[in-house]
Length: 293
Length: 293
Image (cartoon, rainbow over all chains, first blue to last red; front, side, top):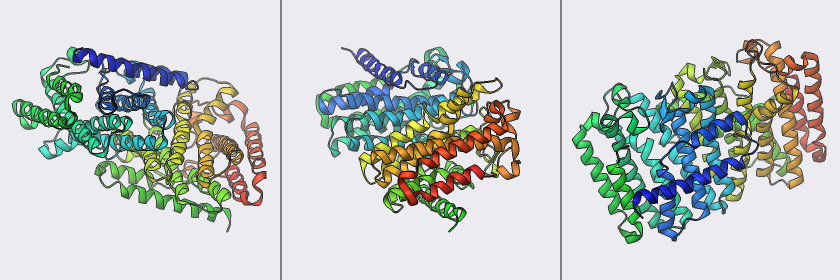
């Protein structure tokens, strides 16, 4: 089976689990549920969730229920970050995953609350559905660190403040690592933890996730200047227009492509100890490097 | 020591713990940290946190470290809900705890992210600081249910949608229970869990919290029509102006006061099994009933 089909298989597994978990929330407010179903049923690529499932498979030989829950939790938290990031006071975007953003399809208040609900639900499913409480606590701690004030939110904050002024490469790396790479790292670690990885294996997966995530975000910067809105399913050329701090803006397009490639090579090198079993992650890193949307 | 001083003592204990927990977050983005320190250092009454500490004391005879962490987590999550609730797209308020709201003191994007960060941090401290992982998972599950899409957020959503149209008493009870009472319930249960309560004791504390919380929210409705902004530290008369669904609007002021009193009596009756040890909770319910701000 080629990479595209393998990703599609994992995407469907994550989407099924997300549906099941949402259906369990029977006492949920109905207007809110409508918004949650809308945002979660968007055509997300589910790369973070797939990364969790693949890492679990590499370590344990199969995708277990804990990994499915962990993958769903990380996609809930990723989706909440998009919903809030698209708000008018933030990046102010009308288009996401090829459809109107949550605040456009509903209203701003609903989008704020739907984001809050998804973030809370991410932690709730880890607390309620993971088989072992010591594993659940580990996952919750990892996710909170990756997504919180020292992780993704720090990156979003720095990203907003960096707009419209020239920043250093160091600052740019801090922003992209915090905003994007840490959640990739968390997704890989989630797979390792749920698969029962040893400490050394966890470290390799963790560093692989971080480097792949940074490479992914540089590709995002490059696509913003080189792809169309139709291709991306979100507004193209926005970063440039907003005067955002991006790799192409600081390093130029050519240097950015070289750095992206270097990070991808470094990521793949970290997979060496896993041998053939990690082939899918090599394909993932390559696919992210060559993606056009 | 009178009730006011006892509450002040607990308020300081919670505030100290909040400071310590925030200081531990050394890698936090600095602009974000400024906003977090600002919102958490507001003159909150810390009633929910105090309720946790008192319930722990009633069960175990003392306030342990787990209870302090649990009390801090619930105050973080309560504070995040105020920060988001005050946003222009939500209740649009300029004043909170006697000072400019977070989005007024900083900007909207910072307030959205600061709220997100506080919510995440609430779960993070429970995962990282609670001594036993099975207890941590229980607390996280309780908090997520109370604050999430079937709890506080459901109440906020219904509250927003109920504005400007007349609703039923049933709907009003749903809103106030979800929006406010469930977090009081969670605070009481937090004290029970960290104190090592038995199932029966947890049930009494849980129902006491729920009834006291609902009584508290009715008092809030009443104060909105009867107190000044200066007294309240937030804008008075807002609910009426916004045509909100409130107890005075549906039942009238007199009936609302009677219901508030009845709920407080029911709450106090639930404390009977705890005897003299629960005296502080009787004083709390009475103080909330007679509060003027």
